[in-house]
Amino acid sequence: MGFSVAEKALHILRYMPRVTAKNSLTSPIHPRRRIYPRGQYARGGRLHYPNKHYTQYQLFPPAGFVNDPKSSSLWFMKVPVTNYYKDVLHRRQYPHFSLYSIQLSIDLGNLDPNEPIDLTSICRCSNFRLNPSDNHNGVQLTDPGLDLFSSQINIEVQYASEQVIAAIERNGGVITTAYYDIGSVIALTDPKKFFAKGEPIPKRLLPPPDCIDYYINPKNRGYLADPEEIAKERLKLAQKYGYTLPDLTKDPKFKMLSLRKDPRQVFFGLEPGWVVNLKDKEILKPVDVAWKEFYNN
Image (cartoon, rainbow, N blue to C red):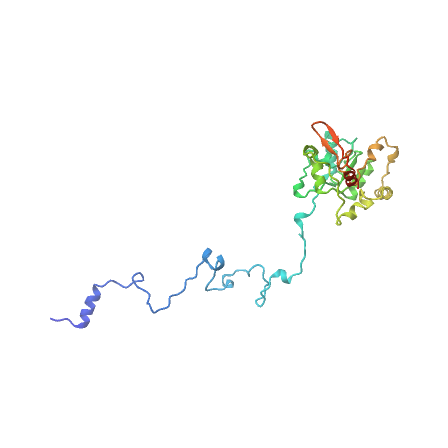
């Protein structure tokens, strides 16, 4: 009995392998779909969305662009410039040192009230740290411990408020605000290390234009201000805060209280251009006329 053509075809298919996704091949005439890479292999090295817009993934607009579909400008090209942090890495910093810390250091014997107090004396205190590499150009005297301060001192700082000035002058003291360039600050921070280098004492530079007004103002007790104007401002401040201004000329410490540095001087008792020899314990002074004129002018 013979088989029909249909039966022969079914008989062959019964023993043939089944067609699945694994053994099926793409037609050679069908265009192959392009696979877009993702991750680090994407276009430009960033994650790429080939089929959908970023808004379909509920993402925010790209940072830096104005939220306007018709605009491709960056936001800082549309918003006015406000230089809040312009040159922030190069600005001068003044670490705080309070009146309470001054009084505590005097009580502990770290500061001598019978000698002028400058940046070198304050850096010797264990409760104060100054690092010139961080643009620290001096010390700012603050008012915590205002009511507890009771010492008569002659102090030189780089910045002080009106309340701090009144607290020191109320006790018969004297305060001066003075500017030091970064080279002078390095020498004042550690004088022994500076003298061991064998370098001459530098000449202190004048204040830059952005702070010259502060140091010529007698209200701030600037070291470049007129002494007669400072005496008038001392009297005005005493009348404002209601205390009696002591007469310094009759004070036993008048000689110590009247000590001031020259605007070009860095250390008390040492002139610019001198070399301190720590090993032989002697001071070398310049002899050449040109060097004398350079350090004295």
